[in-house]
Length: 64
Image (cartoon, rainbow, N blue to C red; front, side):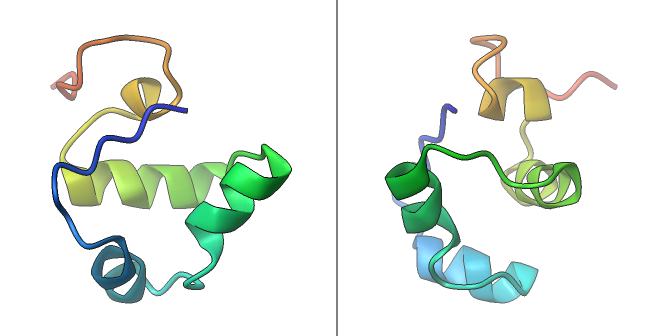
């Protein structure tokens, strides 16, 4: 999963999205991907596509 937060404070993002503070560390530790609804919220928050988060494309733009 690609996730370059470009200086964004991840704890702030997780709080604003209503996610557990351990979400990202758990993903790394257990090599897991969050449920699709969480992926969609993260992508919307960062204004990038879910495909970019999943590493399926190198273009972060959201298809509109």
